[in-house]
Image (cartoon, rainbow over all chains, first blue to last red; front, side):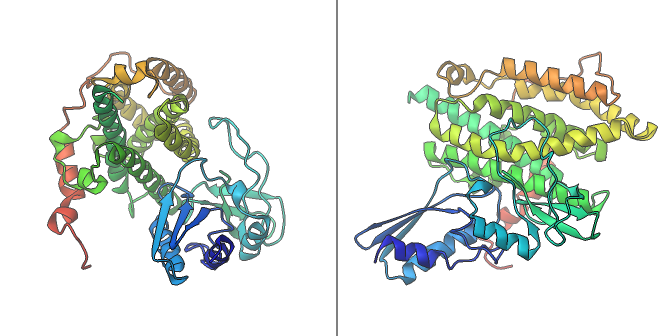
Length: 160
Length: 252
């Protein structure tokens, strides 16, 4: 068993809240190490209070065990903190097609300054004439927008 | 780490986590009762984030003394809690809740900013994580202060009334806990004095711009986190009831 094979198996696990993307391309899985018959998987939380974390941890462990490892350890690391920049371009495109505006490139901006002066394009019609309805949405990682062009409300990934 | 520094760090982490847990529980009382659906959802999100932060702080304590975060949250009595009194006060009206969250968010954001350079790597790492979430809170509550302060005569009056009550309670956020000077000397946590200075500067500017007057008379200002208002007892009775009724809670 090689680490590549483990990575490939883990890439089959969908994100519990956004099933069109998987936990590897979301940047949640940070590392895979194999030592004899033991696999150590390192993961990082997206948002610290995300209720999907337990589920993701369980699924990582179950998937690695199914590959035949006697012992599987899933470790959580906080550093460096997860950023939406780690979501792969392919996954961002899939988010958009799913109806969720993907995050913008995150900069190391000062956290006290106003957020997002640049408009978020509507994932349906592409219009830049959109406005934020709520900084908080149905999950911790998303905000609610409305498109003033096609009149549709939509979710957008928060840029962190 | 010297044992007295370790003890002080455990106490500080407990205080940080306890503030978040109690404030989160207070605000969770709005779930299903928010003034509009969007705000109900927004406040529930903020609550969930604060619980996430508490989990991180309790987790850091666990690394030091092996204590179980669930035990700390659900099986400690009010006397053992180390939250400040501000977070215990009943939720009041919407203006009261938004003002408290704003004053707390501003303190938390500024404290975190100063704590980024902690010499204790696990704490510095947790800070980097939390800071990214906190800015969304501050942006949200800051806007509510403007909205209520400059809204109607009624909304301004209610916000002003909340400020008269909370301003002195909020000062407790900047009272060091016993032993905190040891942590500051070793660079583990930031000195609260400059954080307070920045907090006063930011909050004064924002509150005045929203048409509010800072209270002239200093009211009751709590000092020790070992003492609590009567409200903490009833809050814990509700918050801990399920866990104490059935600690395993395996059957729903």
